[in-house]
Length: 157
Image 1 (cartoon, rainbow, N blue to C red):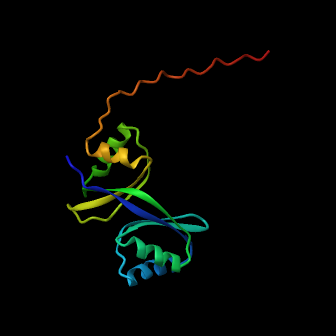
Image 2: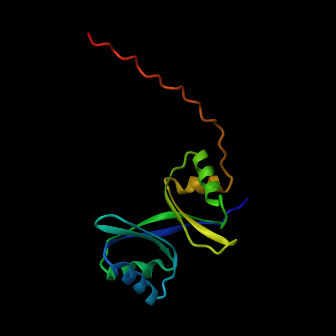
Image 3: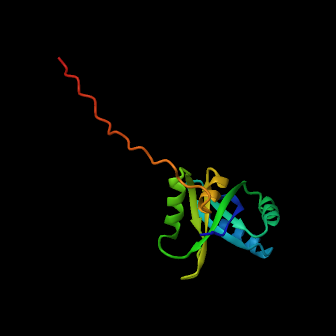
């Protein structure tokens, strides 16, 4: 089965965790007609981390620079999957069989019965693409580990 997948630039934007900051950032992108492909927002006590992929990278960089917010860029793997139960689990299982760790993942909100995009941050993108295209199969079986027995307790005298 051939999957539609591609590399994408993801922007991780560190925002102050206050009302209106996210809205302002999204409004600026919208005003300049930058379409968001996928996004997720996580919070901590002091700041939020907005991770997003967009249709226009240069414009996104310029807008975020103008907003004077800290930004990191990284490559992520985007995989088009069916919007159905278990679709992302299948991807995760294939990658885990080849010992490829998924650091984090999020999906677009696809239409019912339609398609959606999974965004995956993986340790080795090229290997992950090869595995998901069926170019690499697991040839070794994982050796069963022997159970670890607790050491006997030493008696105190």
